[in-house]
Length: 153
Image 1 (tube, rainbow, N blue to C red):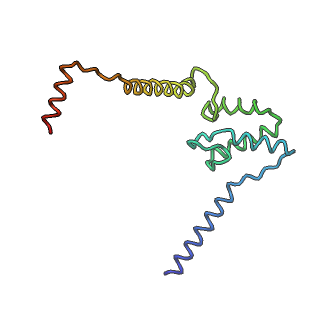
Image 2: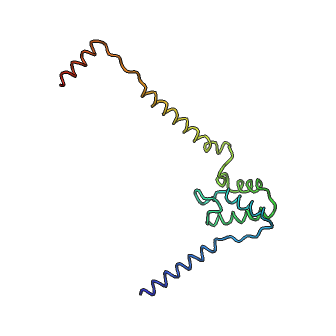
Image 3: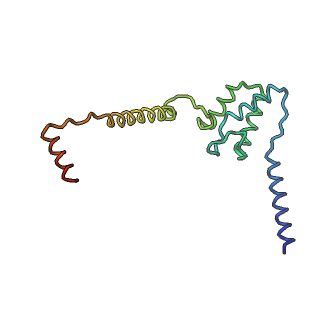
């Protein structure tokens, strides 16, 4: 029985190793400059399936397809901006970690500024509330307070 379990564990490890090895992209570039541009671009784009992973760090099938698209466009001589435009047009602003300021993306840029302003107003309000001036008691009120304190003893 334990030999069967050991065999199943060994097979699981081998299958996992084969799957991990299959996600490695082996790409040939014409120059070191093309390879540098490719690596910079796949680090710059977000995987459409993953929440916060760039193309180089994702093993999702869509990320693999996008890496191949970037590779093909780099090899075709497209500029970095042309590749950005192509991916943005095809997949939307989500693939960009720094989306351009537009009507559709304004909330992405303005919400942090708005939250910062709200925080500053709340902080100012709390600070000013704590700086109230002491209340001056009249002579009669001061005598009454003294009397109440004396009665406590």
